[in-house]
Length: 482
Image (cartoon, rainbow, N blue to C red):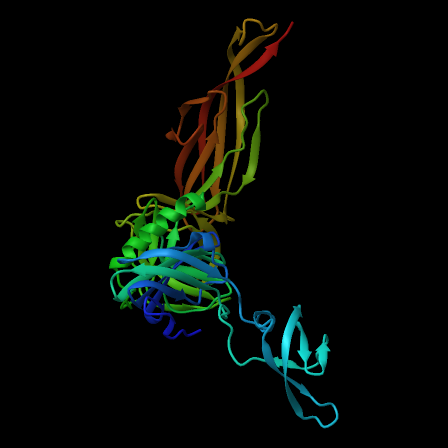
């Protein structure tokens, strides 16, 4: 809706019109966006009415911030009175309007004048010269657009200034119906390098269309929107007073993100459209040489109890690992998203080999992705022998009637891993150790990993079988109430 300059009351109050305007949308991951509109306005001395049209239908009125130069905001009013037949009728109650209906005999249009007395839904009650009609079969014709109605919500602000002339005025508010997510595609180049492409998908379900807007994306988990968002909005508003609109970049790849209050801000380097119901894809990462390691990993299901446990034919999870560093071909914050992996077959044809999700990953963090189970690698394990080496009796509480008997056992364990593939396997075997268990003897050097996990790493050549033997000490607690 286009507004023109209009004198309202004397010289002190004017209806300000838009000279130039720009719009920027900052989208968060959880159905939320901050919309910022900047406009240059001619203001007179005193109080001015400034209208912002084309407000998002999902705007949150309580979140509105008006900012800019040397002026005071006295009042602001948010109107969501959308333009339709029913709202036009209700806006003209008590007024005279034109009517039109088709003569059923000759088919001609017949015009008349009537007063709108009331409106029931979209049905007007009309007073004609000949009487009152409650079920008028024709249509009401309007000469003018009632004030306060628009095809989108409107914000009316009363702004006071003692400096006549052009002023930069900005509006920022929160709106629902927006979201974005990241998606990655990784292509295996060889046994050491990946090519990784990252794209963001922008979603607009706000009911509003936007043309030539700047887009920002915020990555991070905003736990409490009401506490975090107003502070972040002020940060954007202060920056916008000094900054120009986003300029068209020479390449369609988003630059490195900017750190912002514990989150990361990604800026599209060009203006774009974002229409209602539209999903737009934009590239933000194009890493040609990413170093990676592929591992086959199983978590041993062996349990160290009173029986000799065993397992067989367990296939390992295939994991791809890479570090988010510049030396390894990355080195920028990676927003959470799905990553799809592709590799080439013997004929050089591209094939899908699995997918996983990347969590929000800072620089220097390691990424570990599960691509499914390796068909050609399998393992088995068993407790070959176990014997008791001691016991200790004690009461956990002096008032307890029962005593706790701590039985110490040594378990002799053997694992066997077979690689029937034509490719070598970097194999990782993880063994949970409970009840203060320890590995005190082994034929392959292992190490403690996270928590109570002990792990061995071995390289298995194509069509090779390898064994790992170890001695594990642990204890079992039982209660003796005799």
